[in-house]
Image (cartoon, rainbow, N blue to C red; front, side, top):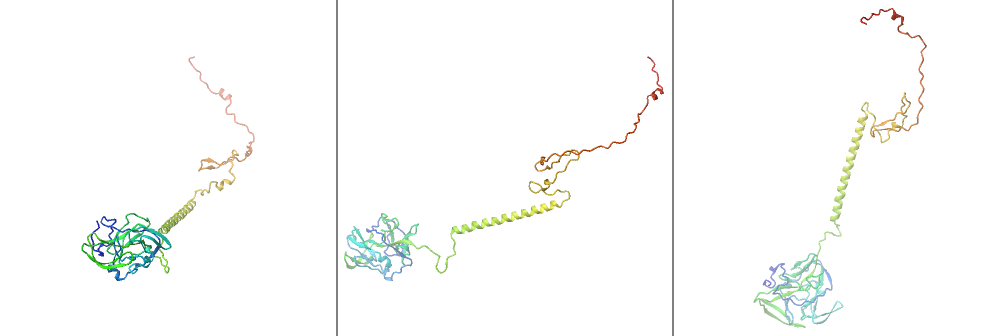
Length: 347
């Protein structure tokens, strides 16, 4: 059950009551016809805050706050934005012509209406946004009223369209109302409310204004998230490339210094260049004794060099022959006869 609150009390704030059990809402025709912008808060005159209540014709006899069109052919526009009034139409029983479109609506009284949607929307001054959807859609009600969403959603793009703002009377509360029949004003009288009576009002719905920091005179320098990420990645890649270049140059410098130091050491062979040392192209040395070419030994691969050079005929060397002379024969046989040879006794 909705909380009993005096009509027009702003303490209701931004509370939202969806389909309260004790709330009886009038029938509402739902036709989405126009979309209008409302970018600046509409400021209604002070008289709109004096609770101008209108009691519409039977059988409903609902009481509405600042009803813009209590009967066909009359409009009270002071309390609403001009675009709202221009697109607003009360729908009575029978045929109604609106914006060159013939509409048929079977309702039981004149409280049904067609209202435009605003995009973007800023709630009028003294109104509050009672509920907001994730896509930016919202509905505004006059201060002191709550929002009753439609029992059945008729437009998924406008969830609050067909809903009603409402406020509860306190039992015994006395208010002044202007009563209408189906054609004109019938009376202005004092009315005493019961505990279950309520007053209704029309919500203004649409999509809220999206904040935009850009202005024509001073273009925004704010970068999108994707642009910022791209700049960050590019900076990191550039820094890595610079570091790699520095490391490469340092290594090249160290190699050059090491090569120079090695070439200055006595007795050291010069460094090999590539896989084919230049000194391999020189004529290979020849063994003086055999005449065969000597193959160079490759210390890196553990193999001898190319042995396919052509065979060379060894040179002939002649030994010198000394002149003949008589050789000493050593000892003579007669010398043995002159020597004493002892005899062997015993046999």
